[in-house]
Image 1: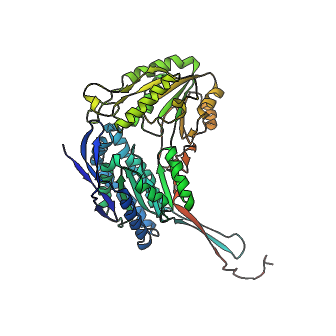
Image 2: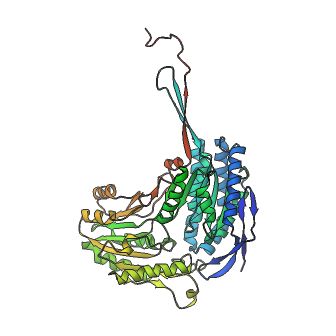
Image 3: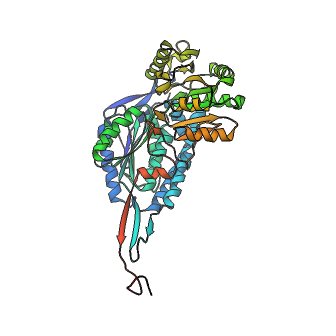
Length: 491
């Protein structure tokens, strides 16, 4: 088996370190290589390089250069598609179809932001006679991008593409679980012809020393973070001391609301995938199923049959429906969540759990679970599980469905299943969530804003609003005077 040695990409060069950590395949727990793991030093060097590039190159001022580079980055990913899918499947555990979904969704984001760079414009107004005001949108400087391990390619791109389009230079921190994927992405971008050295820097670390430096540094005025609500709150508290700008996409506990007029048979495979895509390690995972009384039994039993037949296995097996969790520590954590839920009153419809026998026992595999609940205050209902565990509960009417769905600290996404368009719009408007999908799940587009209400985050990614995390507005007031008569109004 081939092994890989990953290094950090800083100021246009690959930088090694004497401190190295091990990369594993979560499906087999075999070592697949090692990576440079000195996050503090890497972050310091990357911040210095990005600061130098922001001030010492034309990047911040040349929109055409930015657009051209973003287009080149998109083409570079497309040209290395299979290589990225291979390493993502191996290191992250995604089945190949899901790895392809992630990789193939990234170039369009880069091209969207290339287009936005080309159309970047402030505005000019004449607030009173003889006065002219110019509003400029200027890049903030160095953007720190802290990427999660669950979908590092597309979620990294989702943050650094608008930062680059705005004219910021970037330092991207990847977690150690995907250090090899980070290195491959860096190698691909290193060949982008027009990208100035230092404009983009990528490092990986197993801990948080480098990420902490990004958050604390006076030279990094804006942070884009995707991860847990707990971590988002911590970094927000630290960064607030420097009045940093934060874009935070945090946890989710997405309700899926099924009314009695839903088209059930085509819905069931979508609900299954809402739980099992990325092995449930997804902020929009459909982890709460609310079903109206009249169709409750048929939905519960039909979905339970599907979940029992999900084929868990490695990405190397084309027959696998769902890959492993990221590591065995998370398998143990998710299983304890299920165990505690059963102790506190939930009922197992499908128990699921770790695979403890056979060849897959070596890996971090977890069979999907489905638990019936009646108490909305249970931790299994209220707290993000980040694994393939679903709760199901009944409701009687629209008001109860909305109350149950909104009884949560989270508000990232939700879905509504009904053939009544008026009902769909009523419920969507009443839900406290940043995205609501009607008769579908997780339909996210490059040009539509994505983000959370309540404890699910600050700011938006994708769409025009994503630029706001990376720009400052500057007002320049001029007084050129009036041509012609000096009196006003003219006679």
